Image (cartoon, rainbow, N blue to C red; front, top):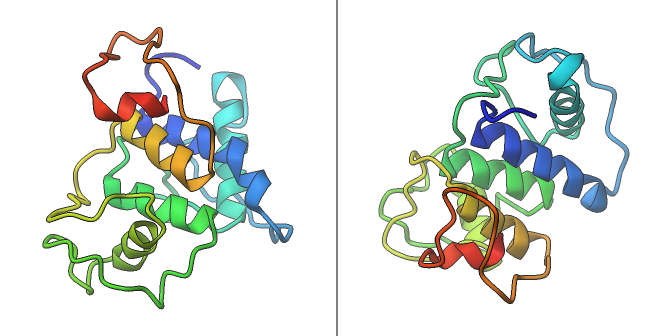
Length: 170
C-alpha cells in the first residue's frame, strides 16, 4: 500500500485484521456498495477489509456509495467503528461527561461505551470532530483488544517521537 493511503484506510485495515477475532456470528451477505474502492491492484487488500467490515455492520461510508478511503478518520468515527467491532452496548451507557459530546451527538453511545471500558480517557472534552492520529488509533486498538503494550519506545516512522504519550501503544 502506498503512502497516499489515509489514516482512515490504515485504521480499517488494522481493524479488519482484528475484527475476525471478535466476530462471534458470521456476517450476513452484504453487497459492497462503495464504488470508490476497487477490488484489484493496490486497493484489493483495502477492498477486502472494507467489504468484510461493512458486512459485519462495523463501518459505513461518507455517502451510500462512497467510502472515501483517503479521507482522514475523525475521533467520533473511530469510536463508532471500534465500539461496533467490540460489540459494546452503546444504548445503555453512563454519561462520561464530555462537554463536547451531548447525549444527542451522533456518536454519543459509542464514545460513552468506550469511556466506560477505559479505552478512552474521561475528561473535559473528547473532540469527536478532530482527526484521529495514528498513535491514538494504536492506543484504542491496543486497549480495546487487550493487545500487548510496547515496553520500549522506538518505531521506524518519520512522525514518531518518544515524547508523545500514545507512542507506547504503537
